[in-house]
Length: 92
Image 1 (cartoon, rainbow, N blue to C red):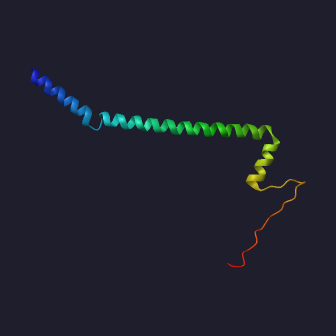
Image 2: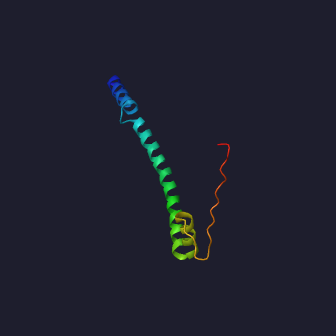
């Protein structure tokens, strides 16, 4: 009787340790959850920065002007645009 219980226990333990649904899968799932949490934290920080930028753009005309200059290349009415062209090297 004791031998049968011991064999059944070994069989169940081997399934727990070595089967595809055992500890290996649990370890893999825990690693995937940790990776997803890290990615979620990065996205949360990016979203907070974007939210702050949206609030800034809504409340400040200067922020909108700065964004228009850098992203769209716009020039203000009282501004003069100067384009500096590097001198071509005669040796090439």
